Image 1 (cartoon, rainbow, N blue to C red):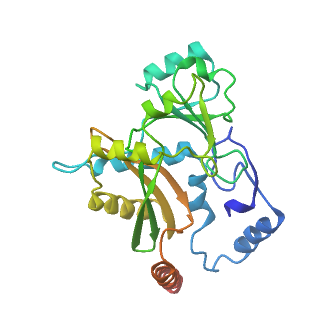
Image 2: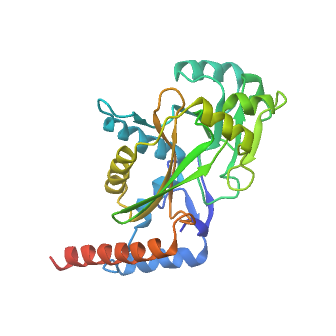
Length: 284
């Protein structure tokens, strides 16, 4: 579905199909589904559409914070703020009210489906917002120092897979190479990742590890609240606090870190279970 989007209007609440223009082919599929409501849709469009909007993603993730308990790391969403412009004086006030401090990662509100959805920036001071090229409206998000390690989780039905990948360095290392300019990048193509030397330094400084049980609980709750069969999310472990922060949530991820021998059986099992569940509801 997301590959067939022509445009998204970020100024209206993205709620399928409002605010979304699809290709002729996808529009025909949507009409077919409306005409034949008993046709089995594994993941309905209306369940996918919240993941097109980073503001809605944030609201979904905030609800997971109830998972934290004594003796376990805190699971949370990153602190964030939606803005409709980068005006200095007004923005400074908004940041203070949202309890946000620099550095900040700036992301378009539209999360996928359009060409510039992955054009982002890391901003180290308020002056760097002038002439910033990130599309508006935008989401300003705290930058989490995480030792250049990101955990990518993949959910297929009842199965949860994960892989560890090298990620962006800590903020102080990024700032030293930014030259007093915002660091702009495309998160799909030009994401700045840590060097081998930086990885060794991070490993020596912090040894917070992932609590897989907490994240698998989150995966189960996300599956129930989203009503989706196949989705992915990214987790970083904050240095110092050990907080487990979900920094991204998306539909139909690549699964490229999961071996086909594991992913394909899980995929077909999930499709079969979803179909049988829907078929049973129709018959009753």
